[in-house]
Length: 430
Ligand code: GLU
Image (cartoon, rainbow, N blue to C red; front, side, top):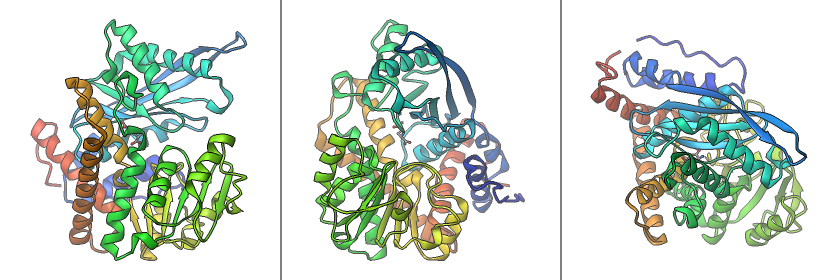
């Protein structure tokens, strides 16, 4: 098979970049192009109108999406985000990453992703509730505990999941909480789910530090994004004794070379809503944070943060992608050339979907695990996934980067399942 790997025309075209990576990985692993045929497009992509009665009595119709990328391993799985800058291509790419992520970490799910194009910061709770319920009414028929299971993502949380579970249960006329994960404990949630992605980021960093001979306790950590993933990861690093020297969110950031008081910062953010104005450090911008003097950089915000124009200034030795897609292909090349180890999103942030899987299992058999069990199983899964991917990368991907290793590893597993299911005839030949 001869596959021309194109350079994405626009640096921020995540879908083109993802398709190029998938193509390239298939070629390097000498898999059949039929695998690419299955992965190049979602199995189903739905766009819906989501009518909402606003608090002032007017009606607004928002655009909603659900991308069901691939279900060779099981029900589609992936978050729903509320964000004004969502595009169809970004949702398709995000759903592809979920397919790759679930395969990589070995949970029996396929990949999906959904969104509503809206600005949640300008909406009241009641408006968000009505919008969420409206989304479920128009899309509920393609969701289900056995078919497609949403979860929290950017600007959605346990409360949003509880509304989805309730609306879906009303439609089905039977309590059916397994239709979403990331729910509050009172309605079938799993202990430790909220912290799971940040915890996974921490475990993966610990393994990456060990693999590269870095002393984690002395490692200076910088975290971009102080939402669910960034804040929980920062708390764990601080608890482990690693100085968290810089943190930022949409409002800007703070820097203290001696290490920030993370619990005080959490309190500040709870009080004011933002990192900005925290007195325990010097003010920096989001852009400054990415190139700050540190050992471990954790982009845990949005896509396309590390790019061709800033990657060369990154000083960290290890990058752990807490967010989905924070690095462009151009930045990937620069970081590799500068010998920076980048642990890719589909591995680094897979702690969230891993505990989503635990939640779904508990919902299915009606039995609750305790926090110790959840955390131990999460740690086992993350550590094992890191070791498998890292050794595959070191042994089979010489001269390449860990993202390529992770894609190849994940796609090989997908190809095997496709072949057994009869979707392709011969997965290993081009
Ligand atoms: N939104 C998270 C992710 O991107 C979690 C998905 C899930 O738990 O289904 O991995």
